[in-house]
Length: 93
Image: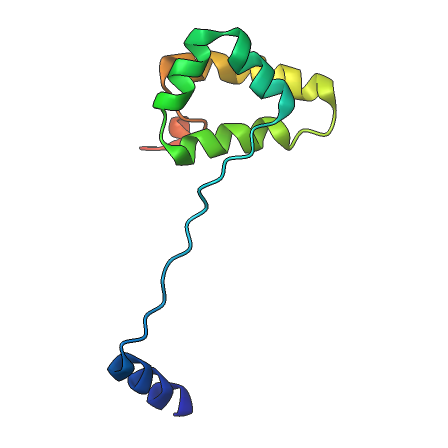
């Protein structure tokens, strides 16, 4: 009951919770190098929504070994150039 009263008091006082949005996209070094070398890849990557950019950056960066990162980069670069999101193939199933 205390929470309800507190929520009512906060609402009357005009207090609101604001959604925190992550804006920074941490691009791994190997991916950043590929973006600087391939201009088409860079253009297509930045045409994607920030959420899709983050998905690709995290997918490539989360690999522990450099070989795995390189393999993921090669596979993902084709999808990026086509404008496809990493998880788009699972939508509309």
